[in-house]
Amino acid sequence: MTEHLNIAIDGPSGAGKSTLAKAVASALNIRYLDTGSMYRAMALFAARRGVAVTDEAGLRAILDDADIRVCYDARGQRVLLCGEDVTDILRTQELAMGASTVSAHPCVREKLAELQREVGRNYDVVMDGRDITTNVLPHTKYKFFVTASPEVRAERRLKELRVRGDTEETFEQVLSDIRLRDHNDSTRAYMPLRQTDDAVKIDTSDMTIQEALAMLLGAIADKKDR
Picture 1 (spheres, rainbow, N blue to C red):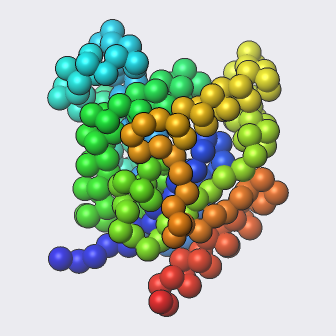
Picture 2: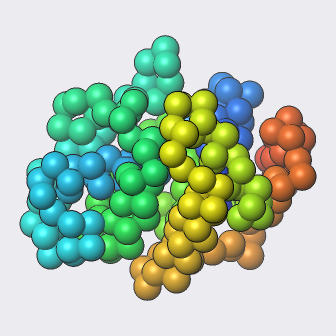
Picture 3: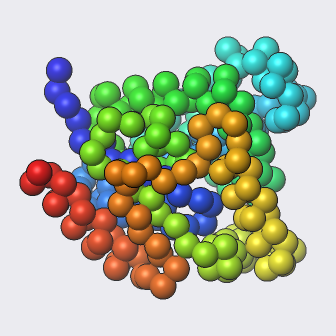
């Protein structure tokens, strides 16, 4: 069996890991898998079925019906929910918080983690998320933890919202949401967000994407030579 190049990137919301992961995938000409979008799709599915993201029993009951798939076209990764392309409606603050809550349930996490592992078995891929280095791709030697200060992450998120035309969210609200999500992600009982001992830490607070990309690609090249 061919062993594929699997690059795992974990980190908190807004640290730039998705932007960085996409840049790495482009530089290496391999696939990029945004695992967070899969959890957002699950939160969307739960909402459409009238199940609260806090209701583990309710989520377990609808889990088999949640057909979440990833495909690729000229625009990049697309997320299909029961055959519908929902990619363009997943980037709301509500679904971001819903994804954080729904991902705390082991039944949901394992269903989606296995779908992600399947991608890793079949393709050279860069994945980013909260438990890629610890749970999805624990055996890869290409592990990274991308972070930044909560304030910097809030500024980036607010700028993203403004570009999309959302003028209602304030800096204080976004910062509060980020701190709450950090707390939820790092304190959940099952597979919390944490940096593994063998992951390379990249703090992007005072870095451009080009600087962070150069650092990450350099680390990958160094690990390939070992």
